[in-house]
Image (cartoon, rainbow, N blue to C red; front, side, top):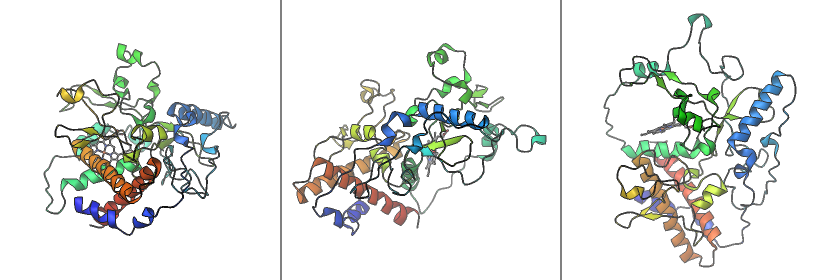
Length: 366
Ligand code: HEM
């Protein structure tokens, strides 16, 4: 991996960006940070749209996807939320827009309720858990060709391009209270006054060979307003940009991106490990002292909230963090007058090229 990183640093992709010239850095507007793009507002607007469609009327709340993006065709750097990458269709591929359907929906009611039957005459579909138990088996099938890095890079790439947030889980964070879906009358459930239990779609697990409980909590994906002109049915959204743009490293909102920066020399924030090595910074919501107490769950902060989902994934994130900081240290030697902002933006561009290079040259064509 290291030689790959060095290769791309020197590649022809990168050289044009080392030329020092005036740039207009375009960071001012960032739709994904604004209240119209919060999941709670999305749910309100989307429900209003569907109710209005049933009544043969127009939705009364403003659709966030009609907000003018005022794209600047001369902007030197892209916006972090992916709007205006396509000047004709500014929302295309941007963070927090509805997922596109390649096939017609199969909602039970044709509008929003989940499929329960395949052929109505055949009764309810089997439990998803039962299908999983029957279909999946645990076998060992070692590859002579690919290391575990292939899988980790795959997950890392997925976390650049898709995150379908769950209902009630603002910002795609993992603290969604889905566990309480199976216990709606408990004290814990009552504490979450804002949870909409209509969004729970639990999986029955009676007589399960591995699980004691007879209910597996499951919550539906968050609901999204539809893009203008789209069919009047329930849509789900992508919390991230659809572009391979290293957003799992940098984030898709200015709030998140800024929280990861030093605002000095273009650097990203780091923490130090036991051997003084550069690590990802800790998440602000970690329990106190969690890294020193072995049985506490500590998580690292990065552009995507799933960074600490498993250690291999965290390692790839760490490589990209170190690469960003290595590049800005080199850039500043070549361009001592560059601002923090310019160093950060050019290194971000480099990370994007690096990821695209690894993906297309070493993963997809092997
Ligand atoms: C140890 C490895 C992994 C674990 C523990 C894991 C875990 C998960 C979990 C818990 C979800 C959310 C499921 C839900 O919404 O209910 C998920 C979603 C997903 N995973 Fe993984 N995953 C792993 C590896 C991978 C790999 C290697 C890839 C691709 C190469 C991948 C691609 C995806 C995708 C595309 C989604 C859907 C994302 C979305 O739109 O929300 N995962 N994974």
